[in-house]
Image (cartoon, rainbow, N blue to C red):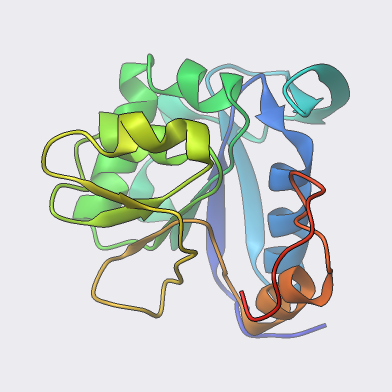
Length: 192
């Protein structure tokens, strides 16, 4: 087990409809790197994950409710995708405020797939380039924002928001070790 993130606490902000693989794999990566992870959602109980936005996946216990947490308690924020998840979150004032406050506090924020919708809703990405699932492009490319199909990393450029996420070296190796894109099953071109 790596200790790169030992002593750090990462908030995963998710709701019903989260894409299961986009919740589980980043969570496993940051926990393997030594971080404590809290699943934050809109209400207590469990959230329902989905596979491919169609098939029900597993349920996951919520650790904290977004209306009752402070960004000061976290070192970073992860926004997994799925279509329904960020759509539910961006309609909640507390969820939007949490993301906005995290960005303004200088916390790293990583968004996957449709997760950038929440960054757009929080109005923290003007003048920045986002990547996302292609269907999210029209929302992400509204005035003042740029959208690209290229993957980005938190270490590139001056932006604290990275889409999609590459939290740690081990997470990057894990992602790149598979010849298939983990969310779509399509083969990736070599060198991506």
